[in-house]
Length: 604
Image 1 (cartoon, one colour):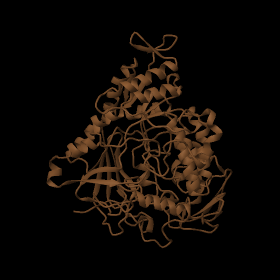
Image 2: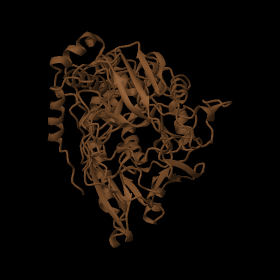
Image 3: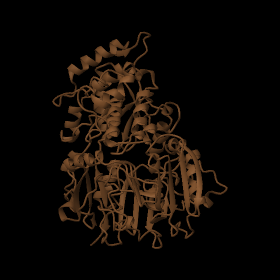
Image 4: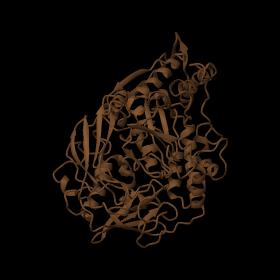
């Protein structure tokens, strides 16, 4: 394992520096912008600190992915686009450093300007910025992209666009966004929208999924694809931004390829057979026991563990509260009690992985143990009457027993809560007063073998409560379609969360997602407290206030008992060809979008 520059204690110290640093963005052009304080890198920086500016160019990297794709438009709700399409071929005005909680540096934009209150932000395009076909990036392209994404694109773009009062061209290469809402994050979000070529979409319906290869400005172009089987990206030798300091040491492979397979087991088999060259392993027990194949023994394949200091995020079974059976928090708590995490973790991981204790656990943003205090308590106090028990008083997930599949003590507690909620067992089946059985559909994506193993153990435990769910397995396209429209009772749910949560949290947990399709609010939560905490986060003027608001949100989410969480890992486990290398300097976020394949390289 290669060394990591930041330990967790260093991150705490890093956060403390932010607490003492007042915002310093003035109304004059800057090379970068940070949520709080100043960007860490000066205007004349040579490269991002976690990139190797001397990395050689050439070679290829091949990934294996489960599932498939049926669209080449990743910016709309319809269809399923291949991972990496937008990442490799399309750029935004600003680029994000994954070594800082939330800092952007100029990419398509040569500068960013905003006032101290961040009521507006202005970007100036680089004159040399070009699309892959050689045509210049214009203000018309920029403004069309923002308006189209904000009105016709995926719902994830709509929240921020609704807060833009005015978009106007202010110079030959400059555009200004004026905001109608106090929200300090908007100045950064406006720098992170993909810029598309307006002319390519003339006469076409943007909202329709299609297999037209997008014309972007990024370092790669699509070299070939077959829906559901593969997509290949080749490095553009005429890429306009190859000499930018932000890009130095990045985008080193001549070719990046994604091959698609039926399920996770086949993906692993393809890797051991040499068909792919890099593979992320999410199961610690498998990492310890299954990586002894010939290529490992010969040294052709090596194992790397990449540490990180980011929040755990949330992964597990989400309960859809739009379904009447999950509307009562007592029922959701009973479902949590029936899930014997300790036994499942021991069975599948050898007990090595820590449990996700809250949405922002493993970070300074996580809720504290016990009752809320200080600013966190003050923020939650106005909503106390409507919050589930434990939100303010303190809440902890049930603890099970690693030695047996069923924890009888927890099942007794679950039975009592279900009875209080109006559910009792008759003839071995849990029913309500009308005799209607407690049942729901558990939706799983095909090929997710580990998820299926977790579900199998959990379903056996639920039988002890008289609950017999229906398990439905669908392909990736159907899974996306059904979860976009919230057509499930319970589903496998993963949300990666960063050290800089902001407006995207409205998409994750906001009330609009109760009825509007395509949000991340799969649980259907409608919590004024959650929305108030997010509002406090984006309006925060100091890191201290921001942390308090996020910790308060973490309490609302966790005590809401919407997700039955499993485990997370403090490291990413990547097995890869010995010809693939990455820098010694690991960024704060570790293995995160922007790390592999961006900073990796090929070398014999």
